[in-house]
Length: 76
Image (cartoon, rainbow, N blue to C red; front, side):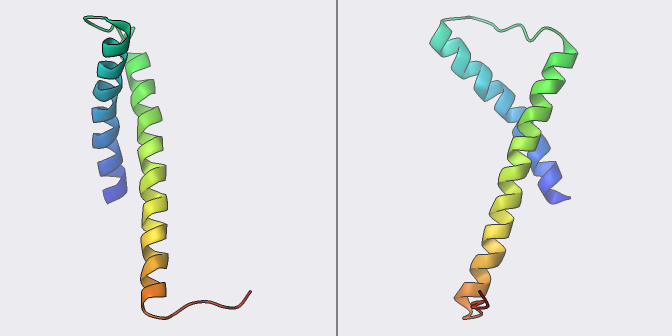
């Protein structure tokens, strides 16, 4: 649940970071997203990107904790 909330907020922030990068490189003053639907599509894309990063980070952290305690799985 926390991952979803963080992904929603960070995904929203990424929209503006991406827009600033595009405006800087293209020399634009403003960006027209084309309405509410394209804006929500960009937000959804960023949401799933951040959510997948957070999921992978969580899995990495949980596996890392086991190795630090000496609970290495050598069953291969």
